[in-house]
Length: 257
Ligand SMILES: C[S@@+](CC[C@H](N)C(=O)[O-])C[C@H]1O[C@@H](n2cnc3c(N)ncnc32)[C@H](O)[C@@H]1O
Image 1 (cartoon, rainbow, N blue to C red):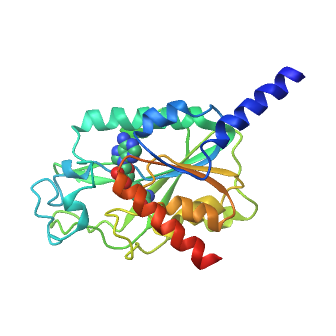
Image 2: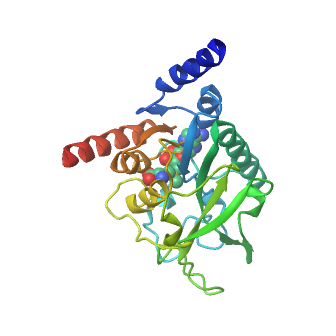
């Protein structure tokens, strides 16, 4: 009995150090230091490796008809340009790290985007193969950076709901359905942010108390977690984006005070 209590306390102590903070560093290194089975919900959008895209002008840098699209410049401190196989292996390693952190009732909302590569659809099945994907939510976001005459303008991204067996939605969340219409974010200097509503809808659909975003960017998941009254942990590699997240969180807290 004592021993179990001691373990619980250690788990709590371990996690407390992480809560409510933006941790600057490499996501795999930092996730490896967090206690196993300590997180309820993960909401995240990894870099999409878009500089390797052939179908939308990203690879040759002209951006199709959107030459000024922010993502053409990539991220601060991250070039988004891995060889595809390496990228898939990295993302699978990240998902394994996330699964280790999830409680037996936890879930990951993993946002990604399908694309056409060399004229053929490349869905992200190679990344999620073998992980317990329970559902694919369509995030209908309207226009994307793509005016290729060979196929229709993509208007959605996906959110893979990857779950541990004990995961259940919050009461009534099931009625939201699996197609979410959420406009893109326009008021954020980060090149690829979540719209706050998307992160909030993921978090609000669960009863999870502790929310992690291992690719925190401008801090949208943290803001959404606070709006939903949950605790959060953020990891981000770029110092610029850590500072941006801090600034956005401070502004959010002032507005909601
Ligand atoms: C798609 S963005 C996330 C945007 C975020 N959802 C928001 O609302 O701002 C992906 C983020 O992952 C970060 N990143 C890339 N590699 C990383 C790594 N190894 N460890 C931690 N963060 C990383 C990038 O700097 C970028 O901000």
